[in-house]
Image (tube, rainbow, N blue to C red):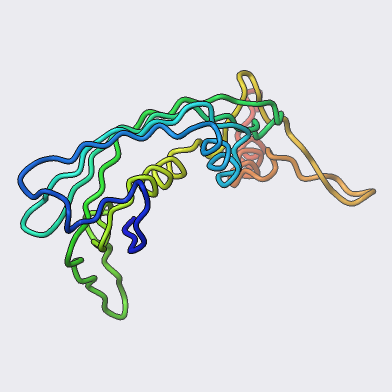
Length: 186
């Protein structure tokens, strides 16, 4: 999350001390929480904190290690009732002055081993890292307690609907096996 435009939460890389850790702590105000919730399609964002440090990593790279804490409210995917979830994650990012080359041939593309690596720019914006980490850790399918999907069947009028049981790949084989099995009284 490197930017060139300075913001209050962006550290200029040239100003960061090489021989000691830079500590930061973000606790967005209510207005900012509301804006983040809206951007991430959340019903609500009750708490959000991002506390950590930046330190030199090698000669020209930087590492960010922080604790992300948040309480998010989302609609249940089954009932649409509000579901409150707590997120507590350790966030690690490495900002590299020179990103490793991706080896690619015609048949296979190799992904870099370090999926926490990002290119180093003129600044490191810890607010942007916090927002990205929050977005990546929000529950994808929140469910309220006891919510369960019931079987739904849809078909044209006058036709037999296909059920979940019919869609199982080996359901027909089980019925065939039962038909071919020798009867006990034979």
